[in-house]
Length: 155
Image 1 (cartoon, rainbow, N blue to C red):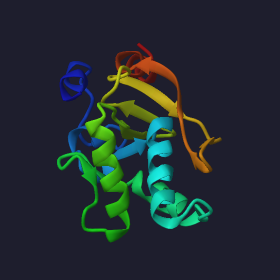
Image 2 (cartoon, rainbow, N blue to C red):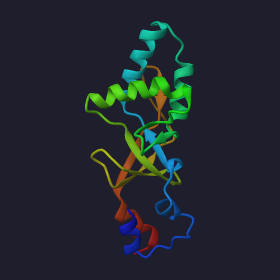
Image 3 (cartoon, one colour):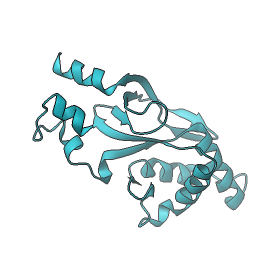
């Protein structure tokens, strides 16, 4: 990313591009996949019973999307609310699957850092998808980062 921004000579002190020069854990947002949500709900019901209210789980998942630690490849381990989600995430990764890890670019745009769409920018839509009783955001309108840069710079 930094090489791309050097090529286009984008300033380090520009607010909109500062995220690329000064990356920290707050820069990343997770988007769940349907398979992960199904796994989490299944495990939650195994622990709490089939008729459990999923409101608390849904709230934990909503919070966790902002608490991914890219260096540790887990959700914030200092927050006990995420221990169940981390356990499910470890199981999910062992199956060969992965969540969609993104860098938040603002204005609902996200740079995808993994999966087949790596290097693409996508919009997060304001509506939600529902799987197994849990609502979560999805990404749409994928386009290459270089295309988005050219568009932003009117090249």
